[in-house]
Image 1 (cartoon, rainbow, N blue to C red):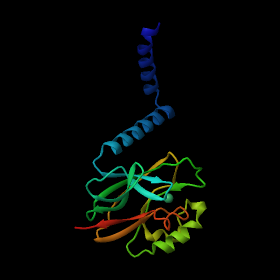
Image 2: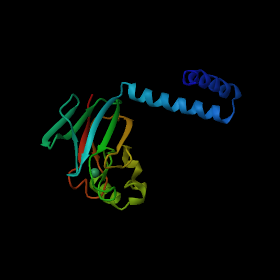
Image 3: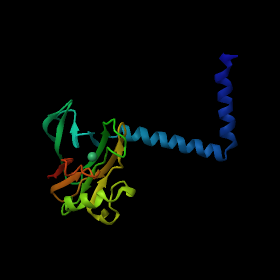
Image 4: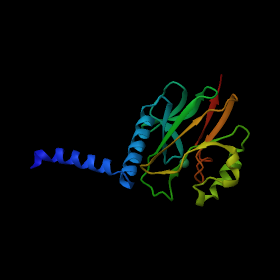
Amino acid sequence: MTRFAPYLFSLMLLFVAACGGGSDQQAEEQTADTQAQATEQADDVRTIEMVGIDRMKFVVEGEEEGIKTGEKMGDYVLLESITAEPGEELRIRLTTESTLPASAMAHNFVLLTMNADATAFANAASKARDNEYIPADMEDQIIAHTDLASGGETVEVTFTAPEETGEYEYICSFPGHYSGGMKGILNVEG
Ligand SMILES: [Cu+2]
């Protein structure tokens, strides 16, 4: 019986495919999703894997091209800045390492425009809990941001670096984290 099962299963698939309709469409959508994920993982967008730790810092595993690191932070080193070319596509993938509840410890990555006031932004963000600490009336000061990641979660965002060279500050907008030092600089240089 068991050895006929794959054959029967194939027949069933053929039957479902031939019937068309809702379930077929759903299957196609799922396939498209899977393909999109595979493409995302296989594409050649430069990805910076960073970790958010309880000490309110963006850290990385070690030095690599295109980033500047600082002091040692447990198993990691502090991420101080990222260098990108104008118009370069970049992906930030942020994992939160924490055993604290989401209400007490979560991180995001918010890249601000060059003329943004990061302190004012962080102050406004701390009052925007209902919007994942993104102040809705200051979205024009954001180039790109991730969702919040609580302990064990990973979030990511893919964006295009600005064409204008210069320094762009990025922060974690969870209350208290920017003033605690959870920030860095995206250096866009030609
Ligand atoms: Cu944070």
